[in-house]
Amino acid sequence: MPIEIFEMERMQSTWENIVDYDLSESGVRPLTLRELMEMGFDLDAFLDVPLGYSQSNGTLELREALAALYKGSTVDHIEVTNGTSEANFLVALSQIRAGDRFALETPNYMQLWGVPRALGADTRTFRLRPEACWEPDWDEFDRAIEGGARMVYVSNPNNPTGSVLSDAAMKRIVEGVERAGALLLADEVYQGAEITGPRTKSFWGMSDRVVVTSGLSKAWGIPGVRIGWIVGPKKLIAECWAQHDYLTIGPNKLSDRLARVAVEPANREKCYARTRELLGKNIEIARQWVRGFGGFLEWREPRAGAIALMKYHASVPSLELCQRIRERQSTLIVPGKQLGIEGHVRIWLGGREDYLKEGLRRVAEELKPLVVNS
Image (cartoon, rainbow, N blue to C red; front, side, top):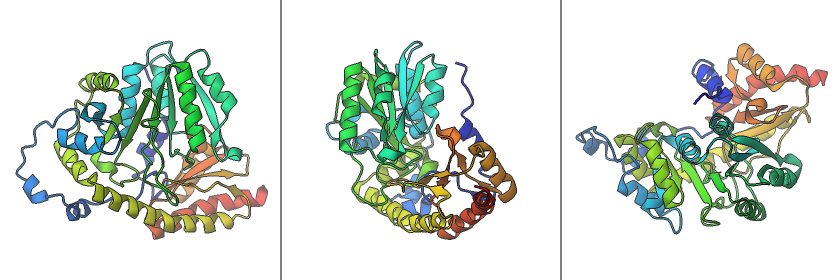
């Protein structure tokens, strides 16, 4: 299956461990193993566990815990994966065939731009409109699915805008999916990372055509254990498991055990509260930083997630701008072009306060000359 380079991921993997300041991240500062031990993980007991294969679709205990998060689901509706990215990949790989119509919202995490195209799908986009609080352009949505679509992909809360769809928008998307006879793949990995306001509503349960993916990387702050999951109809889950057997086979035993600790209700709320507290402090740092540009930067503050999508008022392309910042300031941020929206950059808000302040200071060094010339 020939596949194009995933530009954002390649950029990150090339530079994120080389630069002094990596503001290209998208989760919160990760938890440590010690912090998970304080939540109940028994490291001493695990030292005697043979490191054989774990249950390939996730242990029964973990799938039971995850099923409890999605009303009406059972262990047979759950597939545990190596991160949310593998969950998305498995759904696409098991369901998309050459010639199928695939629709995704933009801006977005563009994994499911490249994968459907590699599978031979007719891949179309519909925009989220900043002037409408990042709600979909409904004319574009209707055109993207008209004539029948196999799958529609959304991320909610959205990466990179941090926006959350209204109940009315969610309902309209589901109605469109049902009208087209499509599947809705809802990536909900940022659910629980709300900076203010209530927990984001899940698409799960709104239709039997809904498939949800999520994982421990963003709201939980545990990306390194590489645990994600799919929640969907039993038949689809079985088909994803069949594909999983050909790929990574399954998650590792230590990660599965750590995940069982993290998703316990009390620990889940601890992780979410930690994320909200961290982002609540850092969003104010970002606000003050944006104000210092006197209108050169424009943003709609994220409602959820450790990411800020900012529009800059200059003609320089985002790839060129971000390369300049990396080379001159040893600081990495994400160009909007790699997210499906030119003239913007995505900046991480999930680190330590001192790290964020210095990273933003370095970014500002390269933006200030543009302000003078704009």
